[in-house]
Length: 438
Image (cartoon, rainbow, N blue to C red; front, side, top):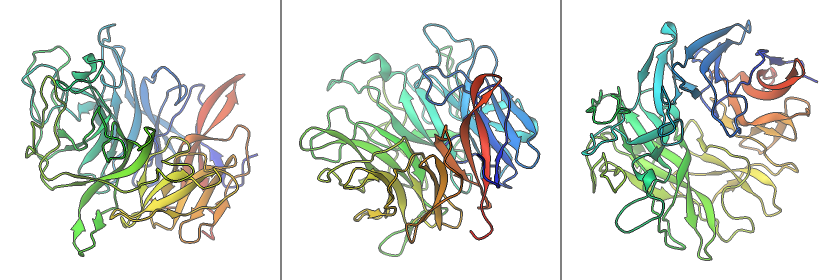
């Protein structure tokens, strides 16, 4: 049964999926989502982006894909009336259809619904274009000031290589950043799938297909988040303005793959090449810009349950940048909330609950609480005390694990639950208003 402050917002006979963060408009009046039938389904089939007004339940279509394209995973600009999301190829063919390496980010001004502009440029023909990518981007998230955009990336050029070799890289998921100041990026038309982009895009992580056991080498970088509303404070008192926390797959001394918390510090200028071309080569992925520093923050191989574990989740930082939250099992095997400083150090266990954390999570804007699902309920945990408060009664089915998102004003939480409509089950968007004593 729904609690007194819980409301179902969407009722249409199709699925609704929230992204793990950034689903609210800056004024906390609208929630944006896509219409995939199920976030964990094998087929990415959403054809439009919608927004629901929290007060009235009224729905607006912000973008409708055309010519066989698919779209989804939408996030809102933190300041302006804009959204960014994935768009797959129009006129897909068996040789070029939607996939991790064959999609892009697009931006829509919500005041001009239906008109999308390209975020990232694509150039699939060598010599490649600096500031363009050769593959697909995913889960686009603005910095808190709305200036830069992060994303995960898969390389279409390198996808043709099945196995690793000293002579070439293989496609591995990495993290990229798009910046507007150096754009737009215009590319040649040597390939029918090439296109221009408004932002200048680069990769900022390094992966390897031959990781050394017990080292900080990673084979995959994923589930990232911007650190702080204004970066974080360094031990010497200076401030690192922009940095990204992410999960990286390492190999333990025993040969086991586990996920650990990593960080990349970013320079103010991402257009200067580092130790290789920003645009990559036919056999090498794009190189990070000069000044990017990648660091490992957690070392959990010796724990009874090593590595980041639990439901799929993205790392998230406290608004002041002091702590990065993630999920990991405690010594008894229960998934709990943990944090680690961006400067490094031992992780701190936040929750000590009898039930595992069961969803992705977000911080409240004031940095006091984290919203998440536990024991089939939407819950809020006080980070200072570790006390978890249940906001909704346990439900069957429980809230979906993909998202539990605080509103910008800190007074509401958006989530998704499976409901039955016309003898069929659909994921629908719900909103929970926090009690007055919180």
